[in-house]
Image (tube, rainbow, N blue to C red; front, top):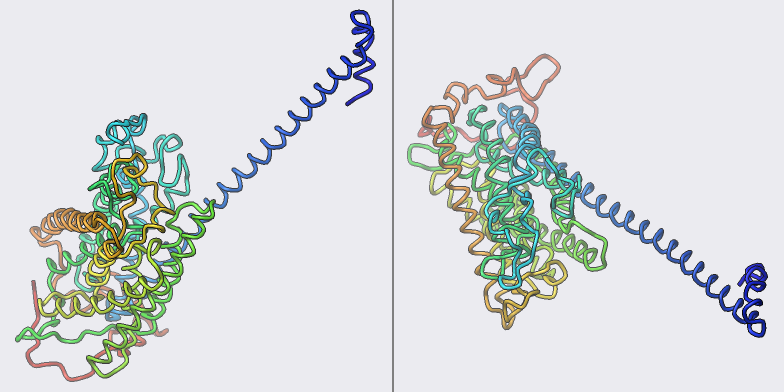
Length: 541
């Protein structure tokens, strides 16, 4: 309290009430001092709150920037893996395709893909309807997004993790680019480059964004966290075992079937002829890069890290991802030894990636022991699917179909079995549970006691919906190219190799000009050197 304040007020009060003037002046000045102190404290609190808000935004932005960069680094992993797993005469071609996937997907994601995936029209989330337990207007965009094309008016729209966040576009594009590049391995060494360019833009701009909208946009119809989920339960796919890997893997598998096998892949009796890749070193390098990138793919999919719960989920996702990949690799290694009595390096690399693909759907909601089961079964399931494709005379040079579509489907299904309710509550605001529309709140895995099985049902519906959507689009798309004989390269070009015939030379150079096929470094590292079968026939289909 200020004495100067009392001295200023006292003369005036004395003229009215001399006996109590001093007490009244003291009371007034005390009140004024308290008010001033309160205002000063409020200003300080506002400053601190503003600073904390900025720090929170910065940490969340850093998480997505870091995660998106790691996911994009996976393109280097795909490039090395795919180049090493095919013959050296086509290495430059598949490297170009990988880079082109990133560039084409970025443009298509900007023009229409991001809007189809996350766009919500201006009326989509204006008012909540207590009767329906949903946002009025949400049914108008449950199938596909309808805003933010070319990032128009993005500042006022939901962008994935908040409103008007630039980093959401970047982070979600990195995932889109991954879905686009997965099919490259399935159609390697015989696919027409023009057809590849077409499907790269088609998946990025249309096929993938629609699936992403179903599962990850609040106005979609499928996902666990959307406004009106299927079965009032919803489909859990944290980082995209179904949305990304099933979509890309199935697209590649359809392409492999429609383009036909490589020349000489099967002999006259229908028996497969080995066509191993040219560099085990590149395969291992690609696997390690993909392993590294998966720590952005899965943990960063929490999108925000500003609470204790979110930080816990992020850490758990990293642990389960590691265990699933390790289990998948070990299971494939021992299964390979059982079949061939030899320790298969490439088989172990494939198993590791299968474990990662499978756990991607549920890395945030399963226990570590469950992650080991998920990854281990994925490795064995992958080996079975590879055997089945050969029986059906389907040539998938990198086994991308079994790896991404097959084990991605297993991961989605497994989520419906062992997703833990406690962990689900840490991640999702389940709208039907929040508004009391269901008796058993927060549906969880069918193998836990008192589960009603609705989550498993939702997972199955998600699997079927993705298969139907991707199959319908990609069969029609590839069919048009095949109708005009533009899907596959001519046999003579395939024999020479795409590098020399289409890209001006080999991916390798010994210093004496472009190398021939036989002179390429590492050309025979993984090649079967046994005499060719007399029954090998060219296939022109």
